[in-house]
Image 1 (tube, rainbow, N blue to C red):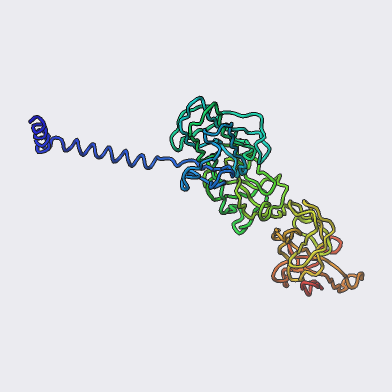
Image 2: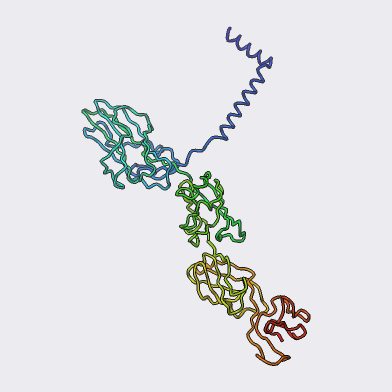
Length: 457
């Protein structure tokens, strides 16, 4: 009767609808909590597992595993039977080397044991200083101290190891200590493994040159580069962006901390350092990101391009005459002699170093061409740089006649006399920009009767 009465009261309350708002509120709170828990759940850290290859049926090298031998059932070791009237020992070694730099390292042994009687015991021990592939250590530590107690299926015993431990020197052994009389109990070793937590390797997928957009396979000194990718981790912070665990390098050159200007999990920005001493390239010579101690296994192709910063010229800034010598100043030219072209004509190289190249202005430049590019090409990888708006100055090669009285007609021959797309015309042959002087005196406009790229009369 009392149960019926309570049910009637609940039904009555529902009918009165006084409980409905409370129910809705409860459902809302539960749903919100469930959604929040799903959104904030953290994924398990990446774990690399290395197993003793002495285990029958166990995968020796796996990642994020469950149990090495679950599928095949328990592994029964023949000499772990307590009924044997000897002291039994089974050893497990031959672990494979670690593939990553670990943040934690744990040795785990899964086993099952039947209870022993009469003072018989078993112990599971490990050592870390063996000769690789052998169990020859004299220093053993208990992972399961000597006991005769039963242990259920998949009991896990574990111990922490140094993250710098050489896995190939680990050995695990099962010891059986007999007293007297058989008891027909068994110990089953089910799985022996190391579990090393590690940060996933940085994965740079591309980069952009924010200073010279057309340069898509490298950069020059002081240019800004932005790397895109994943697993770069949180910003280690200024002062910690160029150390052993967090850095950006071009081949063997590590970008200094001051030149790494931004860092996020998916993007890193840096300036090509003035102290860079490599030329870059492909593979291990390219662009490599290291984050959390893990280096990107697939470096990006990246060249440090040659960079002409200034010219040393005989008299006029960024200009010279044919056959005169000029020096290109800059960086990353290489120490092996490359090539230089001036306004499309190959120049003769007089001297070549990594920071300065001296060349002669070639005499074959077209006479009606006055300004253009100097292009340097590096020997090792054919990478180039261009210095724009170099000017070839007028050059007098001959006077005919070389002397004479006042009024004598003189023909001046040479090259690049016009300096623009057209030569000076009558009325414009004695101006501030276009004129002829003899001994410091300008020749009047009316006395200049002809003016071409190669001849003035």
